[in-house]
Image (cartoon, rainbow, N blue to C red; front, side, top):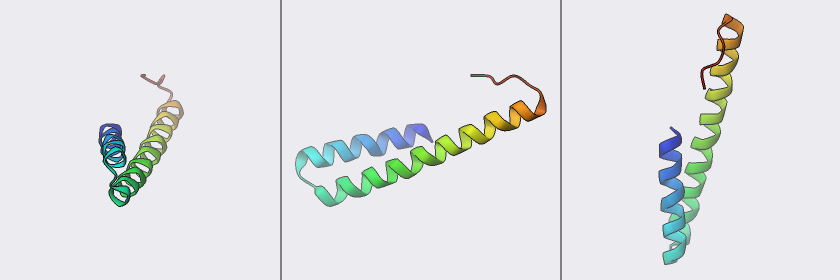
Length: 58
């Protein structure tokens, strides 16, 4: 999921550089949403491993 977030971020940067404001804004919004979903899943995963008694694997 983090990979998709980076892809949309790069699409947003390329679109903004070429002057496509609407596409750049949409891609940046999607990248932002995917990044926060990734962070939420990471925190949930770490909490579940701590509650199970296993040390987190990073």
